[in-house]
Length: 530
Image 1 (cartoon, helix red, strand yellow):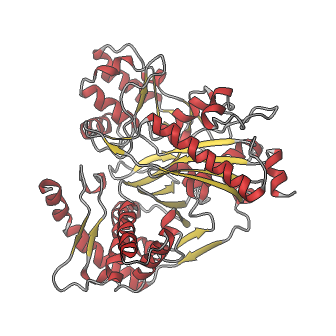
Image 2 (cartoon, rainbow, N blue to C red; image 1 turned 90 degrees about the horizontal axis):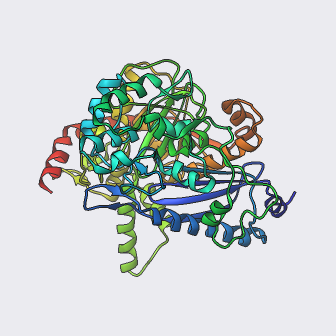
Image 3 (cartoon, rainbow, N blue to C red; image 1 turned 90 degrees about the vertical axis):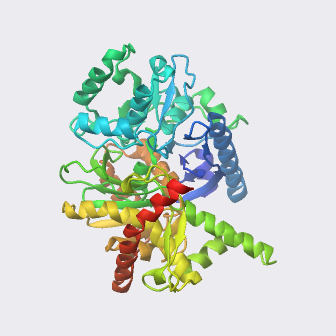
């Protein structure tokens, strides 16, 4: 069947992901190939209250523009109007704080994963629960609001994530995929839902304040991948597509459980089975390893789940590729002023490839990509830095190698803990925009982790494509376990490229990391002084 007929018949899946800098929509066909794309750029704001946030108006205007661009791409590529899809999935940045009252009104500006303002709450809850509660988690944000005596807390009727909020507005269903839910509150692997013992511990902790609610009543209902999660309502269709074109098909359009970007990254890289892992590189950078056994408490490691509910060790770095974007923008501006403007993709490609010509240890050049705080290294705030001794070889190649090494350095610090615990990984996949330039970030990540790294052809499409896959799993998975379905229905015969670590690169990164750890004192001084 021609692609145009597939689209008209609705034999498709639509994945939408709210990333930190882009909202992306991907339409796929029955073979999971990408049929069309829509992208909307957006950016968080730093509020006077010192919270990183996005407005809800920006959520909806961005989503509508993203969907309109997707529909236009369908028309341009295939000559048909997008009026229906087979299934929809919504994903977004995990964690954070979106609190609503009984009338559905937002009680406080959206507090994203990027905030490092919940240290006292996270530390106390970690002690209470006996498991790591990172600052990003929704429960840490809630308890910090309680510790701050914020007036809105007693009025909370619903607490959710960004993906859960958008899904709620599109369907009317207050649900969340288990992977995203695991970044709100600890999940009991035996039940696939919130840990009832720890729910009771939290309720007992805050009972003297007399809020009148139980935590379980505030949280979304937890669903595994493949479960029914509602259908696109008439109001939701207008929110997504104000033109009124979408949703005219006789049958309602089903939605799969909304998920977080960690879960969609695991799906996009076929890393939901035990002993598999993936690295997701975006504004933040994180590694996920599906566990075979329980780990002791490490404050640098989150225990979350796959979209199917299996435990995962997550090493999350607040700072990823944003500083690379900033430098590419600077070099692009220079090229334009020099009278030779180049496209962004050309700028990125040239800069990334230069890194392969750098000295193994970046020639003494050191960089920090800390735009925000970084819990793994104990920093509540960050200051991007480039530091070098006078005798460093300051070339473009060494500079770019240092920038890419900096993007992976904090991740390595967290991954060392998993190595020390003997956590086994049979295959490690990577995805995200930094892997578009073939063989560069992939090679340097392999050097940083000391392990082979695999990248697939969908690596740059990332979580939006993974969300489309989850939407199709809701539609056609047929009860097959998610890992098996991905192996047979999605990734059988998929084109991938694997790079083993080069010994010289490994030694070079080790030297860079040694300098990096010593120079964390410089980063702390910069935060204090600037």
